[in-house]
Length: 66
Image (cartoon, rainbow, N blue to C red; front, side):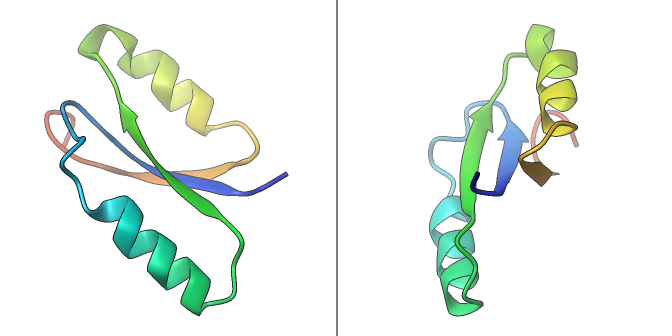
């Protein structure tokens, strides 16, 4: 199972984070993935709960949840 990281926020399709993190992970020799987790405010608690389970290792948080 691939390990996962992500960016949790709203309206984040413009983010360069996946491209930057995939390059860094590849340079470090890690076969992990970095995903955008575009989350509605009403679904925020569920999204955080999802991140607490394997294979998620963690996430960066951006607007509007900072």
